[in-house]
Amino acid sequence: MNAWKEYFIRKDRIDFAFAVKLIAIIVFSLSFVYVNAGFSSSLHLQPNSSIEMQAEDCLNESRQILLELQSEGFSVQRVNDSLKQLESLFNAQKTIKEKKEKHDFSVVFPYCEEIKEIREKAFISKDELEGLKRFYAEFLEGTGINTSSVDKIINEIEAEIKNERYEKVPDLTDEAYNEILNLRSSQTAFKLFYEATSNSIEKFLYKNWKFFSGFIFMAVLLFLIYHSALRKMILMRKLERLELRKKTLKNLIMKTQKDYFTYGKISEGTFNIRTKKLAELIRDIDRQIPLLKEEMMKLDRKRKR
Image (cartoon, rainbow, N blue to C red; front, side, top):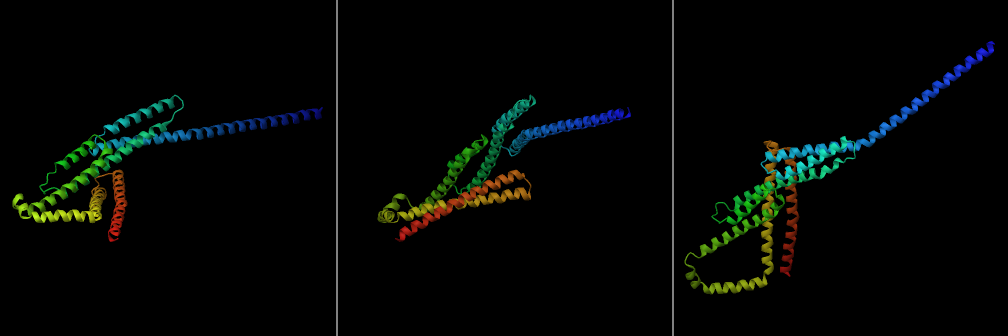
């Protein structure tokens, strides 16, 4: 009787231990599945969460760009329109996310890039105009030359900047530089001619008709013989214009550095954009100068032959 009683007690213990082990295995398995599911879920959500943060950062940066352009006196209608579209898209994606539907915050990024590009072009256009005005003051002010043609181009540039059409500014700036040099050259030629003809034109021509006849003949002859030299003069003029523009751009870089490091007038972002773009313009000039010099050397070799 005692043997049977001992047998049932031992059997109950074994069954209880087995049940405890079985429950432990089930709990462990469920925990593992839950942890894996949570980990997979976090991996799945992380990219979307990261893109949303990037989108929010770019939205805030675009708002700062708008304020920066306003503080610098630029028109901001174009940026404001892009910013409204950006905000509308961002808010729409947040609404879709809250409804637990498929969303994509990356759709706002093109608008952020567009706003950055507008800021970049705005500051470059402003610097280009400032450099042009300095060049204008150095070569035309106080000379008595009729500068209405240059003034018209400068007014056009100011209007394009005001209307946020920054893409048109570079071509107009080049046109203004060429017009300034043309006026300066014309004024110099006129001055020399006027000094040589202090008497009336009729008397001057009457007294020097032989000289002029010979001069015209020689000029035609020399042109036929030395047309390459004339071509070289044209190249030298282009080279001179590029050197003067390079000097102006370097002065703008120095001014920008003083405004940032010495006076603190501009932000770091503005400083980086200006110096980067001005340096690119200088590098572009540096690429053109060797080509002109090489062409001049070819003309020299041709003349020697």
